[in-house]
Image: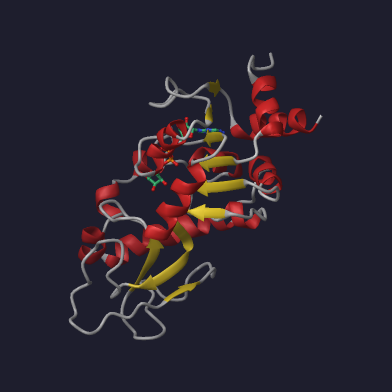
Length: 259
Ligand code: APR
């Protein structure tokens, strides 16, 4: 049974001069990347406090890296799905921006342009001596080395990996709990939220500042839409709820908005 407001949203997609899409783990679910809080979600199996913060990394960098190595191995076998492909196509159009919380880089692999990655990438590393994201330096009092690099090798040759420039421990270039996002990413995401049509897809809308973008969009007068098979804290706030999987709803919207 087609969703009642699918046509109305497709019409808005057709007409909106500035269109922004915020994505979360749900958009990669159909590619086989586990979500965080869903049934088989990562935070159901593992404790974020043991793995995704600077204290855990200082305590046991091997444990943290073994977990990220496992996630890299799992994600390396995943391909962008039709939801990523639709968003990649939309991102070619003037005035369209994609903001993601995902660290799997499937949006990049699908060819998405004007992409802001709020939480970093599984495939990027940086020297752990660098004091970024508000976290203190990892102990030594040498000048911090700001080196960061991309490494898609699976498996990584060495766990924990080391900074190729200074030899210090390396860490995933991912925003951990308790850390602040890069200012330039927050600025880009906030600017993108000030649009005509704001679609949030596949996120539980629990983690800030990403979860605040829909309110930023509303304040800017944007029409807001949520795509999610389940209700979230913003379902009662948005103008249109499209209750279903992104890999079904986005291609349907794409088709309707092009006809
Ligand atoms: N299509 C659309 N939405 C889906 C689908 C699907 N096929 N499958 C699941 N969902 C929805 C779930 O109902 C849930 O609301 O996607 C959401 C996934 O929520 P989370 O697992 O909490 O992921 P996300 O919102 O991206 O998490 C935000 O939290 O753990 C941190 O840094 C991590 O970026 C992450 C942030």
